Length: 236
Image 1 (tube, rainbow, N blue to C red):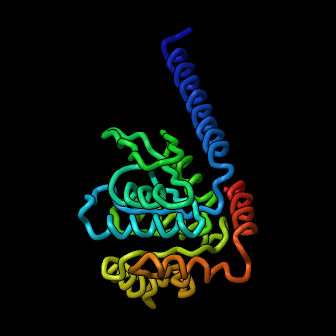
Image 2: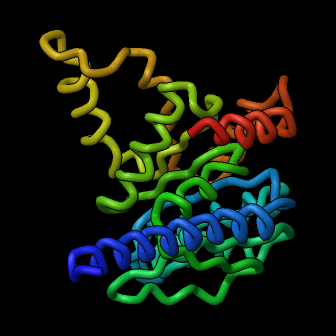
Image 3: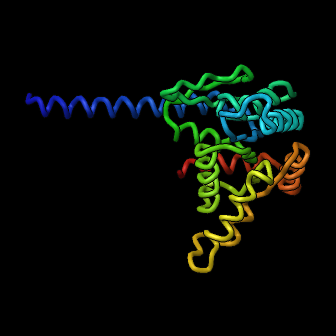
């Protein structure tokens, strides 16, 4: 066999093994998270220290969600993720961390009843969405914007049900929302529909978050939505 053929065979073997690794992540995540609903997924920066106002607010939100009966799901790392997990861990419900292996290793925070590690972002993202009945998005960087944009896209394209997306920190998100309205909704571009903005709500306190989630489900309840979301994700 030629060296080129050997190389091709090796690359095919590596790709096949990678597919099995991805499948294993989906299976492990599905099994370990099978009974966590209703859950609320919380996003936000990994860089905020414990004395940051948004860290402290995330901890309060995590605790309020947990006391209200929601499993708190985060990316499992430091910053906002740690704060929300800490609040959830101290409450009545469970605290979940979906960690990601990075070149600069992200150490899992210690406030997790279930901690799962992923190598692949997209498998992890599916688990963020699969059991969620709402999304809480605190201030963050590119990763947070990526997660927010993906959830908005999934709702816009009807891949997942319309669920509450609650942006925390009116001051932080004011510029972003203004840019969306003036640029993406500008009459010359119209990159989105005006109705797309209705997906987003803004809150500045833990009680507001709880009220917004329960108001959304006042008539329907949580079970139907969670099952619908899980089934719809099979089509992604």
